[in-house]
Structure formats: structure tokens, C-alpha cells
Image (cartoon, rainbow, N blue to C red; front, side, top):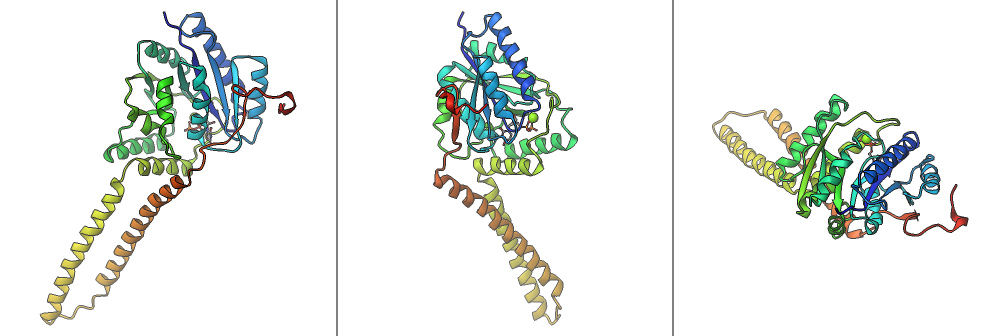
Length: 326
Ligand code: UDP
Ligand code: MG
């Protein structure tokens, strides 16, 4: 039976508290899978340091010296979760038949990896890990997340419900992903677009083992807004529609007030005047903001800046000793 080479890609940003345990846990799982003849012994773990300011890289580097299956990639600055993930996938793909992405905090049950690999061996190119329950997330996070999926669906973007970035991709799926040129890549929206055969594996989401979430509310909102505006122009159409409707309504009101004036009732008119000024002003600002959002996106894309800069890639360009950071 075919034993694929697996690469597990873990983006890490200031994860020194949890990383040693994560490395231990994933190494153990890798050993088990190799023993069960599910994956080849060339399978590896790639930890991507996304410009951490703590000892994350030191931990990765030391582990890579001690264990040959642990690989490290260090980005030169904090490129963000999605970009760190991409950097890892693109660096690892030439060494692997299939790649799994998982968060460093082990909130996603690593046992699902076994199921991912089984699905891959059955011929699926993409396997989505889907959270069965999210009771460990706060009420707020659960509901905002749900609202986000609903909104995206309403805007015509097909997301896999309750799937975060815990998934398996075949090497050719990652190759296909690499062809998407946009600088601002929203993985959860793009991966279903690839069109490869996909399967779903359910798992339970746990508490973070240690450390704090790197997605505070501000980042969550930015992420959601990014998701919407990179995939859909529906919001802009909606705003145009609202603008059009309010224009029609104000015409009707105008006609009504003119009629009143002509009939001799003098309207003081202050209330309606101030209301319409505020209403229209608000609408216009909203529309401008939204248009600005899209223009900002175009601006970012036209600059064609690199998504990430690699500082050290211990897998593909082994380090000269003098550069070793320990
Ligand atoms: N992460 C990253 N770069 C960032 C922010 C986060 O690589 O700028 C990593 C982080 O180390 C973790 C994963 O992305 O492995 C998910 O972050 P987190 O667990 O904080 O998000 P949450 O699970 O709370 O949504
Ligand atoms: Mg997490």
C-alpha cells in the first residue's frame, strides 16, 4: 500500500509557552503513523516562525538540531497567520505528497490527522477538519463566527462551515494554490475554489494549551472584512441599492413637501431637513468607506509586494554554522 510522505505545517507567532508540548505531541503522532504504516518515514514537521518576538525560533531551532524530522522556517517579519501558513506550505511541498496545516496551540485535536491521511489515501486531494462543537470558545466568539459564515454565504462565498485552517492538501492542490496570484489570499475561500475532490473529518476543538489567542477582536474584524471584500462585490451593490432607494424616497418626499407648500401649508421643515441631511450624509460616508475598502485592496494588489520574506529556511537551505542563531 502507498505510504505518502506527510508534511505538517505549523505557523507559530509568540508561542514559546506551548511550542515544546506541540513539538512533542506532533512527533509522537508522527511516530505512531509511521508505525501503523500510514505514512512514510520521510514525513516531517515544519514550524514556521512568523516573526515572533519571544523565544519561539530558539525552540524550533534547537528541536531541529535534536530531531531530524523537525524543520524550521523563519520569516523576517510578522506576515500574519495566512501568509505564514502559505510560506510553510510552499517551502514544504517539494518534500511531501500531502500537507497538513495546524495551529501551534493544539486547539485542534491532532488525532484527526490520522483520519486526514486515511482520506488522502482513499484519493481525496483536500480534507477539511470541521469542528463538531465549539463549546470551549466564548459565547462571543461562537456567535460572531456563526454570523460571519452566514454573511459570507449570503454574499455567495461557499465556505466550509466551522472549518478553520486545519486541513490536508495534496501536493498538487498546493501547486494549484500557488497559482492564485493575489497578495491577500483568504485561504478558506480559495481552497474550495480549487475544485479538487474533498472530504470532511469532524473533531472536537479544545482549549488553548497555553498562551493567549493571537486573534483579538480587532484582528477578527479585520479578518472577516478581508474575507468579505476579497470574495464578493455584493456589499458594494447593496450600498448602491440603498443609495438608489433613498434617492427615490427623497424625491417622493420632495414632491410631497412642494405640494404642501403650494396648498398653503408652510412647513417649518426643520426636522425633515436635518433628518435627510444626516441620513444621506451617513449613507454617503458608508458608501465611500466601502468603496475605499475595495480601492485599498486594489492598491495593495497592484503593488505586488511579496506576501512574506524568508529569513532562514533550515529545510531547503541548510544553515552555514556561523549563522546559527542559538
Ligand atoms: N499566528 C501566526 N501569525 C500571526 C498570528 C497568529 O502565525 O500573526 C499563528 C498562531 O501562532 C497560531 C495560529 O496562527 O498557531 C492561530 O492563532 P490563534 O490560536 O491565536 O488564533 P485562534 O485559535 O484564537 O483563532
Ligand atoms: Mg488557537
